Structures are given as C-alpha cells and as structure tokens.
Image (tube, rainbow, N blue to C red; front, side):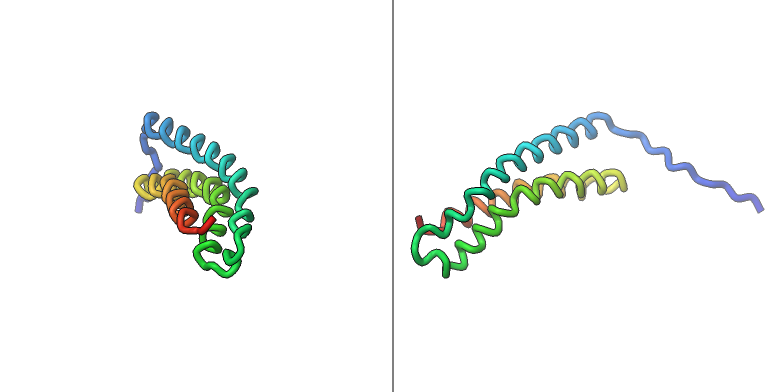
Length: 112
C-alpha cells in the first residue's frame, strides 16, 4: 500500500490580498472614529425621558460597540480568508458597514 500526502498548494490572488489589506485599514480607521463615538454615547441620555426609552438604549449599545465590531470584523475576515472561505471573509469585512448603518438609524429615532 502506498500512501501519498497531499500538499495544500493554493495560488494566492495578490489583488484580493491587497483589497483585504485596504478593507482592514478602513476598518481600523473606522475603529478610531468609533472610539470617539463611544466616548460621547452617554450624551444620548441627557434629555429627560431617554433613560426609559428602549430605542435610546439600543442606539447607545450599537454606538458604543461599533469600535469593537470594527476591530473584530477584520480578524474574522482574515481567519475565514485563510481557511479558503472567501465569500464569508468579505461578508465579515462588511459587518462594520451594516453595524454603523444600524447605529446611525437607531440614533436618528432618539429624541434630542
């Protein structure tokens, strides 16, 4: 019986690696902006009545955690890309955009 070990030789698409690096840089830039946003999120509760407003609490949570999502999404994207799951890797890189859109939408409904 002859056993042959398979080698995992995949070609690396340099264009896709460059795009992943650019998306990672964009996520890190958004994480800095999200950190500044997280500092000011307690101001959501300045108006009376907002402390009992569930939309204000949702907006607070989404805005305060935006920087965390911006840091974890590229990590998940690179792990998935390394495993060969390219569509899921790009989906992970797009999560901060969806999270930020949801945060901005929720904060629009908080009375000022």
